[in-house]
Length: 64
Image (tube, rainbow, N blue to C red; front, side, top):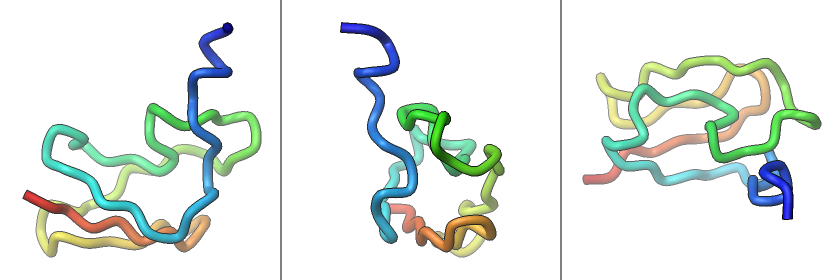
């Protein structure tokens, strides 16, 4: 099993729940494969507790 096969597919969902240990938040996340995704962008989720990726439209919600 290669390291790439252990990563989840990027941009397969439209809603993600993340915890504070995932900060700073980026889309795609470090756990996602990048070969079929958009460029990594960091998202400002700390202020409002939710944000939307400007590339793929995925919504991220910060849970405690």
